[in-house]
Length: 83
Image 1 (cartoon, rainbow, N blue to C red):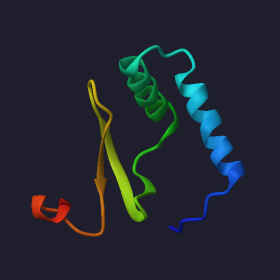
Image 2 (image 1 turned 45 degrees about the horizontal axis):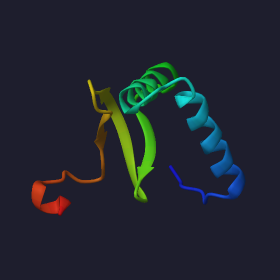
Image 3 (image 1 turned 180 degrees about the vertical axis):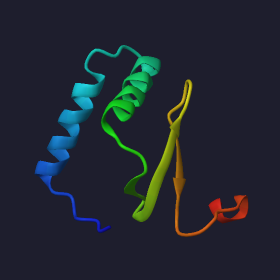
Image 4 (image 1 turned 60 degrees about the horizontal axis):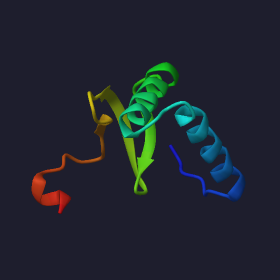
């Protein structure tokens, strides 16, 4: 897994994708549900990605009111590690 840099075209594509997902959503709750539905419809798990530059593997997507992702990183984090 490698991370490529972001350019203006990729950022514009991301903005358009976010607009498509949230276009009919009114308010925070509907936007969160729209993102959750987009994940369920379009992402096959496990899926590799990056969070703040660190490689992760998304292993599960759970959430009711909040969007929660269960991920596996290169180490097991404890509360002390996440200051």
